[in-house]
Image (cartoon, rainbow, N blue to C red; front, side, top):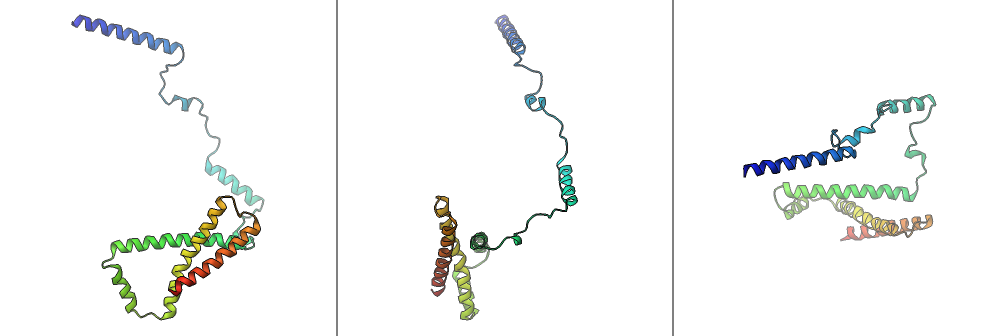
Length: 184
């Protein structure tokens, strides 16, 4: 039995040898690493990114070019202001929700406890009304302007007069909704 294992081992080794030799003749087998494809066509880089950046700034300085146009060179428009406000309300809402969630997890006591605490501070009605408006405005604005953006994503309302019209509609709805929520 030991002789038959040796015989079968010899056959296996010989067949492996001939198979490898056949692959080598066809150019499919190489002694290089498996990533040799990445090394064959590699060429040294001409310049580094830092050198390119230095050339760029030297050229702009030599030609006396300005750094870049600042937002102050543009005339303000309703769509521009609404875009910035949409981003600002989004950041404010996500930040506010995050702070509230962390506070609810970390602070001792329950929500009614903190409502009683605020009530006991006896803020005046003007400050309470202003606070309610400050909380309701970002929610209303971001909601209505988000719907406006969804309509734009559907390919509707993209002409300039329609953009301005939908902008004024969003502003009106936001103010009405914010005032209604403040009055509650």
